[in-house]
Image (cartoon, rainbow, N blue to C red; front, side, top):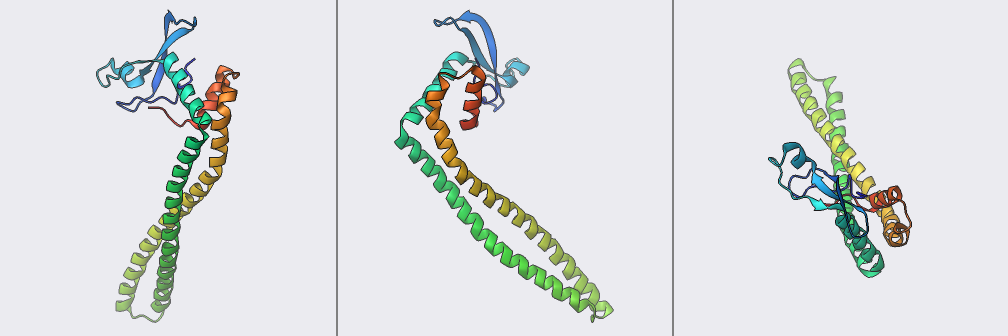
Length: 199
């Protein structure tokens, strides 16, 4: 029951949709539950008016869609290839910016070093001017260093995503055979390995 709990988001306000049990049963003698937007529930429908959805039907539909995807290896491979292409493009962009920024940062550090050395021979008047330049370059260097750290993290993230693709493809392909015999908790875990969110 409620396989999408924690994954399902409201299409109107973006809040989580939580399962609500009813006293009715469906044709398979299962208790019927609905998913209701948390914001709608808290605000009594004044902030969000998203309709509730039948949880039994939605859970079954999501499982069916993943099952179809795992059976259609050609579509799955094409979707993963498209996503890989986007990530590769981003990775190449990050790598190019990283190389350029490393070069600029090295130049900034070299200029800082020369200015610090020039302080020892500068007069009092010019020393003040040199110190202002040093402060400005120091701020520039810190900004560059922060962006370098961001880009290095993004490049590493891209590299790890490539490694995860094979794992996710395998998970999607094995989902159909595993889901029928799995317990409710196992089904939830299986879903969470391949689904980030459902809107």
